[in-house]
Image 1 (tube, rainbow, N blue to C red):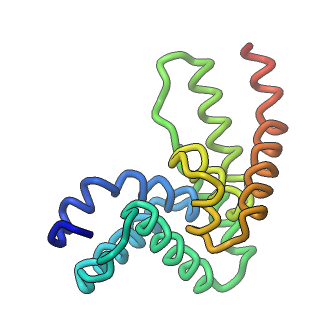
Image 2 (spheres, helix red, strand yellow):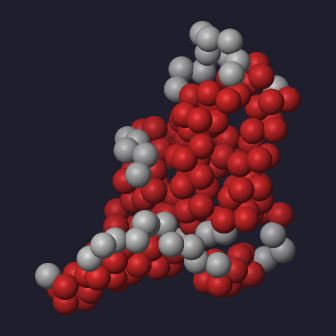
Image 3 (cartoon, helix red, strand yellow):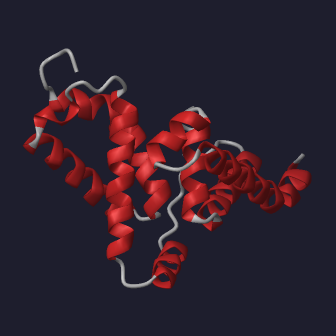
Length: 170
C-alpha cells in the first residue's frame, strides 16, 4: 500500500462489500458485524498487514473469508450451523417497488440461503463482487476448477429453485 495506513479510508471503501460477503457466508447479521469488528481490530493492531498488497479488496475479502471459516469451525456441529441459517435468514436485497420484483428478490434471497456455504461464497463473489474464477480460487484458496464448478452447481440450484416463480411472473 503506497499511501500511509488509513483505517477510516479502508472501512469507507470496503465495508459494504465485506458486509455483503460475510452475510452471505454466515447468514447472520450479528455474526457478520462481529466478524467485521474482528477484521478491523486486526487491521488496527497490525497496520503493516496491508504493506505490499496490490488489491486491497481481494485481500480484505480473503481475510474476511478466513475469519468466517474460523467462526464456523468454532461452532459445535455442522448441522447446528445449517439449522441456525434457516432460522436467521436475512433478506439480502432492498425492497422492490413492484410486487413481482419484490417476490422474486425474496425468493432469490431464500434460494441463496439454501445453497451450501461453499457454493454461496463463490456465487456471491462472482455475481456481486464481479471477481474472476482465478481471483475467487486464490481468495478462497481452492483450485480454479473447483471455483468454477461450485459456481455452476450453485447457479443450477438457483435456476431450479427459481424457475417456477420466474415462469409465473413472466
